[in-house]
Amino acid sequence: MSDVPLKQIARLAVPALVILAAEPIYVLVDTAVVGHLGSTPLAALSVGGGVLSLIAWLGTVLAYGTTGRSARQFGAGDRAAAVREGVQASWLALAAGVFTAIVAQFGAAPLAHVLAGGADPAVAEGAAEWMRVAALGAPGLMLATAGNGWLRGVQDTRRPLSYVVGAFALSAILCPILVYTMGFGLVGSAVANAVAQTLAGLLFVRALVAERVDLRPHLNLMGQQLVVARDLILRGLAFQACFLSATAVVARFGTTALAAHQIALQLWLFCALALDAVAIAAQSLIGASLGAGDDAQARSMAGHIAVIGGVCGAALGALILAGAVVVPGWFTKDPAVHEQAMIAWPWFVAMQPLGGVVFALDGVLIGAGDVRYMRNLTLMAALGGFLPAIWTAHWLNLGLGGVWAGLTLFIVIRLVALLARLRSGRWAVVGARLSPA
Image 1 (cartoon, one colour):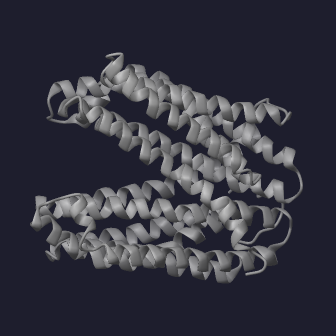
Image 2 (image 1 turned 60 degrees about the vertical axis):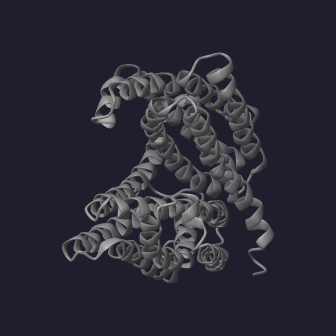
């Protein structure tokens, strides 16, 4: 692997992993702080936090598209053009963030009541209040995700790491002070969120200003970025439909199966988050190679990145297998739930090396700008594989094992198609820019 040193991948992947892990860790801290206020504030945080997580996901989609476009310009030797991609992405992010903050002031209450369903009305009221305040940090949140995108594109990992970790550390300190010491209660959690997100956004804006490039908006370039974002959002929505459908099917097998599914699924999502660090490194490295006109290096690098993803996935799988007896007990003491979790566990373990390759190749194709193929593949795998498989599991009463077999099929279909795309080489289009689809 002389043309893709592990050190080079680690330099990009390790900071990305820390950044990816920062938000889930903070959510756990926030949950622990609010949890001591009682079940009603905790339920309200669950509703409001779920909405904010969706907004953060949309920002991450924008960041992924920006990384590949910036990396191409950077690889072509035009750092200023790479940064200009970040400028336009930041304008889009700011517009989306301001729109979110305004809509939240009027729409938080009805949305919270819909999401809270038949829960105590106090839950919906608390969630709405939390969302209205936390949404004030949406512009900063979106600016931070866009900033992550272009800085990864120019292979600067130091500043995003310090900005994101610093902001979340501040929020983790502020949260208990505002919630307990100053007596703000649940709203204190929202204030801490908004302050941290705003600070992070301002730090990324400062990084743009320091580059001394044209900061004016350019609608043509923003339009091209929206095409990439559109395809990535459609791909992401296919994932969301799969997971929601899986939960709906498992619910029909009973509460015990649903509890076990929640444990296994959240652990699976955490592992996917960890493996995504390799994908982020791939976005930057592949984009830079193609931008430099070196498709041979990009192809070679892509193969090596796939191997690295598989090795990382296999290592995670080994850890999960070793923890089969212990890990479910961290989440439940119910032997029936533990028994159901063991039904999903072999599929969970088997998917790790497969998922490692899939996520790594996702990063390769995002870096190459081959997002239309990824969109179509994900929709095909979801509609033609995953959804029919899990509903068949319901009709044949195959239980939790049938649902997780469907999830494995979803991964396998994507793996086969991604390897075929990799082998074809049609994704390796050189040049500083790609024509919008």
